[in-house]
Length: 186
Length: 211
Image (cartoon, rainbow over all chains, first blue to last red; front, side, top):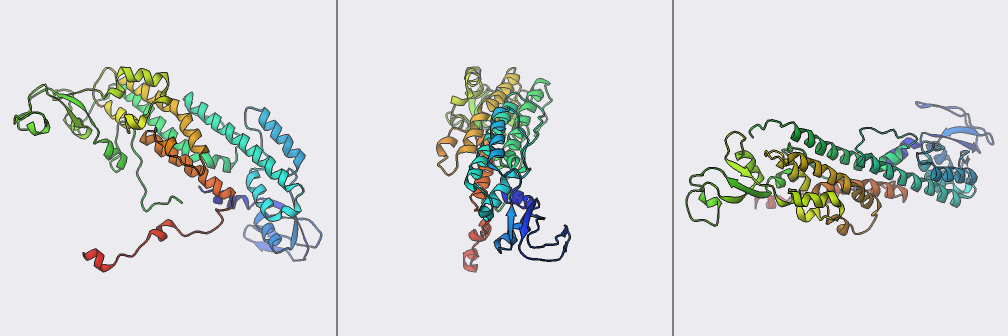
């Protein structure tokens, strides 16, 4: 899976916008949106919000968690805890990137938020790598990975799956060798 | 980015080979020492050092894996197979001590594959070999993972040169994950690019085909 596909999925997340135009309810397959009235906040999917924003038809209200203090709290918690802590949104990384790239004028302290989210991401990836290593070295058969987001899983998926496959095969050698499997002709 | 015109078959690693895997085909050409247990008439040419027409019993020589695997039988002893030295006790201690210092590319480059194939031949050391293979893989895993997930936009040849072929494939998959994420983060993923297949496509001229 490509990160851009993950981003595509993230674009379904709802964000609040304040439109500066009026439009009746629009009926889409994915659900009805609107009605849009100037100055009245309304929930729309991210893709629509970005589209309006690019045409300067709305102001995006950043999600509650996209705030320096809250993110600092999350970062500290993430550093302190050994396990993964719950993230504010299952698409926090994608949302941050898209919103900061397209609507940084609507988000206070955009640069700080970018650094904080990157810090959280780095901590979590380091943790993910650490747990993958201990998973392999202890030869565990299963693991519980709560609170991981799709994008995080996605960066390590291929590598981890391939190595687990290899390890499984090397391990089944072990059993085949000890049970004295009969050798058939080739 | 690394789209290929065909889908490479991954090596079988275990005791079974993957028929269509290029790595496994190359692996089956690896030579290893054997000793003949009966005379092979008219096969003297296999042993370059002797002039006789037949291959006498007890000759020590090196055969490729595919041949020795075909000739080896448990009941009728045609060949006895000696372990390559990487799988012998001396090296096994080295691997248990610290698998990270060994240059597996020089030792193999199909250390895991050949080791698993060696389990076909009856030997009291088989369980130990299998155990060492697994422990070596586990011991080296961290290094492979860290280097593949951290080396972005730099020369990886020094990182890769000591890796076994199997580990190299893992390294590549780790790199593709990292590169995918980094190019997304930099916003390069949103730009549309032509597929590598299209770029590399050249129409063959009729004259080239016929020549």
